[in-house]
Image (cartoon, rainbow, N blue to C red):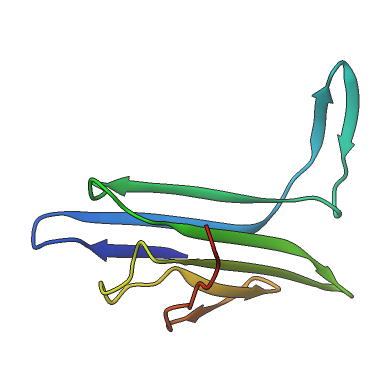
Length: 110
């Protein structure tokens, strides 16, 4: 899902969050090979362009996996987009992306 976040008339941030990307391969940890198995392993690609404000608070999370035969991915983010009219929240089910247009409420103690 791609989102444009307008900071001003001239400044913006463009971000893309691709969840539920199949991942395969091998990861080496302290000389030990750990297999990343096809069908059981997932990745999220997060990339963007633009200019960030000098100071920003940012919450972000993503998750992917299988529920039965369905591939599910979720993307949640917030605070950094508050008040811009843009959000980066979505749910992906079997390749069909649904945007969640509401801002999330983040309630925690830092």
